[in-house]
Length: 234
Image 1 (cartoon, helix red, strand yellow):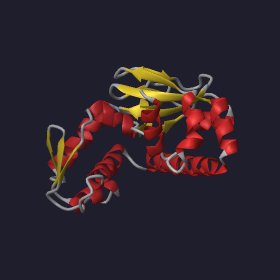
Image 2 (image 1 turned 120 degrees about the horizontal axis):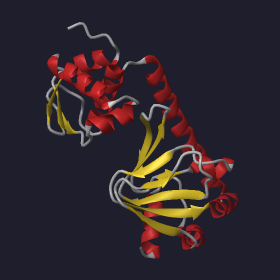
Image 3 (image 1 turned 90 degrees about the vertical axis):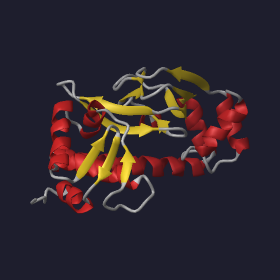
C-alpha cells in the first residue's frame, strides 16, 4: 500500500483524523503492513505487546476466552479502527485476543513511535484518552448486561442495536441484515450457539421477529423492547 493510501486511511481513523498529514508522515513511514486471512489471529491476550494496530481493510474482532472455552466478543474494528491502545499506554500485555473476521490488512505502529508522536502532538493524546474512555463505557455496559441480563435479553438488545444501525426509524415491519452465524452471535453475547438458537426461536414464536436467512424482520418493536427489559407478558 502506498504512503498516500496509508495517510488516507489514518485520516479516517478516530485517533488520527484531526492530525495534518505533515505530522503523520514520519509515523506512517516507520509503520509495517500485515495481511491477515479470515480466521487468522493477529495477537493473543496476555502476550507482550509491541505496538498499535490500525485496520486498513476488512474487520478484526477482539475477544476473551474463559476457562470453559467460551468466547466473549469485546469489540470489532473496521477500516480506521485501532487495536491495542491500552497496551501501548500502560506498557502491559495485550488485553484481548484479536482475529480477522474476514480477509484483512492492518498497519502496525511500534509503541515507541506512537508514544513519541503523542508527546509531540498533545491533541492526539487527548483524542486517545477520549477513545479509551468510550471503550471503557462500552465494556462497562457489557459487564452490566452479562451480570444482570439473561441471554434472551442480551439478544433482544443486540437486535435492537443492529436495527438502529440501518439509519431508519425503528418501526414494525422494518428489516435489516445480520450477517452473523449463531456461533458468532453467541460470541457477542457471551453464550453458546445452542442457547442463542433457543432464544431466537422464542422471539420468532412470540412474533417479535421473523428470520429469513441472515435477514431479520422486526414484527413488533414493542415486544422486542419488552424482551430486552424482561417484561414480555404475551
